[in-house]
Length: 267
Length: 290
Image (cartoon, rainbow over all chains, first blue to last red):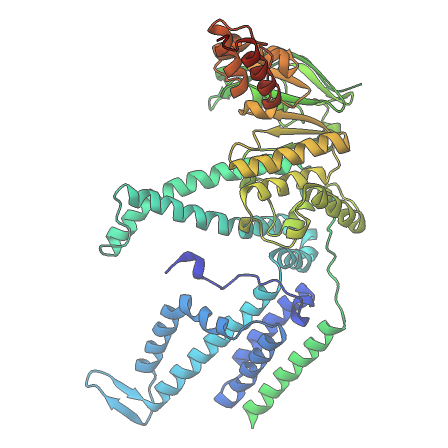
């Protein structure tokens, strides 16, 4: 798989309602979404947050195709949890008897249920990163964590580290590709052999990558100093985080969803 | 009036062992004296290891002199309380644009320096819009930096520095990693900043043709400034330059070769127009008489 194909964590600039929402609200609401997802304990209840996701994707003008694209990197997890649930959940009604293991109707149900839940979780959480620029995201995290500054928690430093990490992901991915090509050109075989052999073949890729990352870090630090960086103190933000009516409306909507899920659970 | 005054500056890269004893001291700068008046366009030439970048890093207090002193607008770089005023006055851009860009979109990166200065959000907006328009990247303001070309990325880095509204720019081999098109873009931008905004420019470069249009050329070798003059004065001394491992612009080289072969030509030709003129004069002079 090509590293560039991973869509999880990417940002798609736009001007939809969801894009314009306050980042802090989006973060808190995404946690509320997890709660909703795990409150639902049957298929009918699970249908509600799934419908909510489709609504949200429509609202932020992002193609449903990305729901499927997201599945690719997490496929191994899905298959693994699926198989575990399929084989090891017991019940009364045996569907297949393979001799060494029995598959029960309950097993199939749980398997499908868990898979839908994981897919919903990933697609739901992706909405936040799809619609929030990394800087707004880190600003929001900094703002949500800033009460902890009184306890000497390094909220600004943490946010700055995340900003830089996000900024350098594409640069380092590109660099990895280059180093891999360079090593292949000199006869390294990176795609053949067993796991142990492949892991060993990665060493000549990782070492140059690390060295260059340290060099970049040192140059970046100098460049930041030249631009008068001196930590979070006395620093202002061009973009002020502002909450609006939409944020409160969406919050109410999500709380209603939670209420509905609880009602369906009981019914 | 001088914006930068360097007096008897010496600097050594020093390495200490675990107990803090000096084990190695490599002198990089020796007794540098240099005054740079406001608004001047200065090109600094020298081969690798001649001390160009070390000198540059002293001009905004990234490195501290081992001996001697540096003043920026009468502010001493050794004074820790003034360090951010000095860095705001002397902006610095480096070779690799990838390693200078902090944020994931162009405009947020340009806003980094003004945010560090603690300006009001509205003022930051005004400044970054102005800076991005000046270097011609306003249309890319929402783009991710890694999607831009090398020349565009380097212009983002320049915008990020001029958003501090510095009076002086120190440019450390900023075109070294760019293709010819990117180099041209950057040189046009830099020349515009110097001419229209009156920003003092100190351009460190390997490319002789970038030094041709400057007001003043400094040549460095082994930690010293060995030549200081106008481009014409410097480039006419072809032999001296070659001795310190530097080239001259191709047209100057041509004139030098012609004069070596016995023709009487001017030796201070540094651009194409002058070269063409001189060659035309020569063809008139040596016209076959049959």
